[in-house]
Length: 320
Image (cartoon, rainbow, N blue to C red; front, side, top):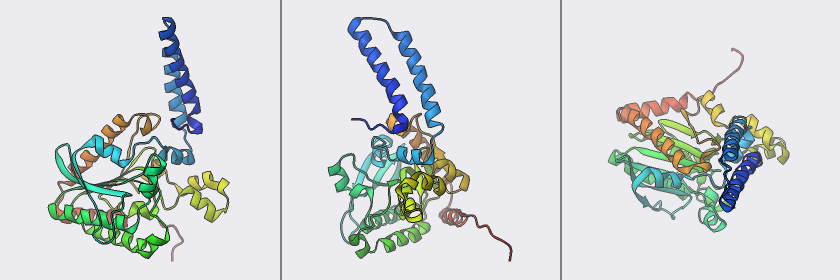
């Protein structure tokens, strides 16, 4: 059964009426095309009204929509000859992060992405999208191979954050993320990062250092989840919408703050309503940025990546 978010209900109701009219028309051989056309026009108007005025918390809910395409769904639609590689050569293979070589528009690339599941068994298998240290070490191992082979790196992110459990701490999750941050700045190949859904804290940043950082229209990227922020600052779960507003985590906020380079548009109503159209838009955006970056020398790529992240952040205060 399809998940219905509260703000989607007016649209779902109209779509249900259209389906009922179509069924009535077929069963009784009655022409109701005019009524269906009017309802469809109303659906489009309602979509524009609803999705044109989402609150930050509503956008977070949309970014987490269970029917939203995940990174692997985009890979299957954008890439050919995908060959997944496994393991960090130290501990195990973390399925919360995948990586492998593929072709996009005939161009060889390395694709790194996070995994989520659509049912309980899948989610348990991929730890609900939260990677362990070995996931970040696997990603870095593959990126170093791509660097030696002079292949561009594409990173697709949709994770609530790195796994905060005891096992992850025992195997040094903080160190794994920190090493990735350092080493990704040293890679001599183009890196394009896209946040497709959730961009959760260091869990996202651990594979998110790129020459270009893109975000989908209804995705979010934040240092903490709104629920976590509300619990820490207000100690009140009802403050979650307030926290989402304060965190400035939406795609619109992030492009204004200079944290991301481009907002990738989604089909009206969200990517979950048209996977194929969303994948086409994503593919075009990634290729456009790759075309720009492959013209740069390795030294220019490293300098540009470093300067990009050094320029983030605004400091306000009185003079000395």
